[in-house]
Image (cartoon, rainbow, N blue to C red; front, side, top):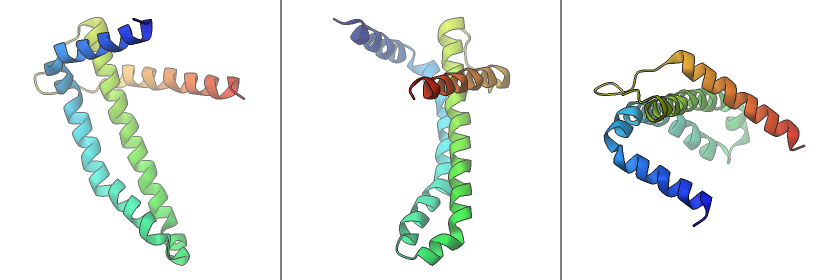
Length: 128
């Protein structure tokens, strides 16, 4: 078995053996993202589809659609980083999430965002 498969099986096993904490860590952020998507994102996607037939309508509402998509992207990034930080702190530091959900830790989340932004910047520069 290759190393990649062993990592994959280990991660699935780790998730299944810790399903309670995994749900406490991820459920609230994903519900927040779902609520924002259903209120903003889905509407923006439908608007784009409907406006493809009418360029004037697309031009008139373009700013609102772009703003909606940017807001959805921001909420997605916050929620996904929240889950990643809470899960890594649970796995690596054995820090238990709260009884119902993991609290948002802004400091580690900003560090995670900064580290991943630096990686993506480095990757985009080195691939060109």
